[in-house]
Length: 413
Image 1: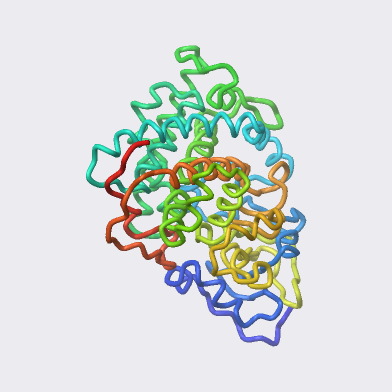
Image 2 (image 1 turned 90 degrees about the vertical axis):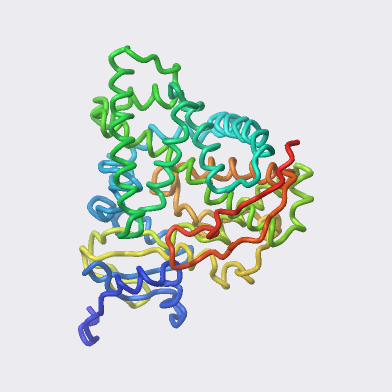
């Protein structure tokens, strides 16, 4: 297996330094969009393109169990989460999430979040300065907690929002952000596990068929209820990704500031354009740099090989900026998604494949629905953008505008 080649150098440290640019920099000299490297001490193969997405999500090629690094589990996903499962176990656990993707589920969450946004905007007009990233996290947390049926949703929203954001913000760093994320997860898993035990004992009443009710009753393939800690992990895997939409809200504001011509069409409430705008924000701005899994068997892709037990990487950021797929990938152009809807294995900011059976993020429809509604409200928001540092550093994962996108002079509709 490529035995004539020199041993591969481990590229973990350059990854930490280069962030989103790490794989695209190495893909640049590859005619076939494939790179052989070494990561975390293991041989790795990085691939890109719609065909590569299908290769990556084939369970005969890759498994998730044991593939996600412990620091990511201890901040972003949680130990024992659906993301760590394969095959029947994964599909059984995913049954909890799939009903949330139904149109009425997305609409219900969007209604709660937009109501929380409208309430918040009335208070922003009384403040000299608002950091949109922070406020969006609080709005999204309030909305998702009300929708999920959590008691004391508003009273607990601020500390919970800080913790949910910390879990996302700390998954890809070894520094203080990572330890804040770990502590945040431990705090919230303990709190929500206690809540789930109270629901099961009848001490706390969960609204019928709410997210809280359903996760308290959910069982995997053996149909035994999840232990309270694992149920708390999966409840957080509804709350946390919703709060993470604050990254896309800050990016949407950044896009409207840089390209204000899009504001008028969003203001009009054009639903098709709002959807296209949401897709373009998710394509254009960096969120996940890549996805990874552990190879089940020896694999070869376009002449490059990786042994069983190695790592297969899917270049998410590089694919979303691939000139062969998008023409002018560094132009922000929502119209590209008015010409034709995105193919599922082309646009992959939240993974590829089928969300019903595979590892594509089941909350993607929720992300798009929330971003559509909040982009329209952003476009209608009367405010100023003061001088600030709006650079988006590619070495920071996950990145965002350095200032968090500050606004002043908010005038409530």
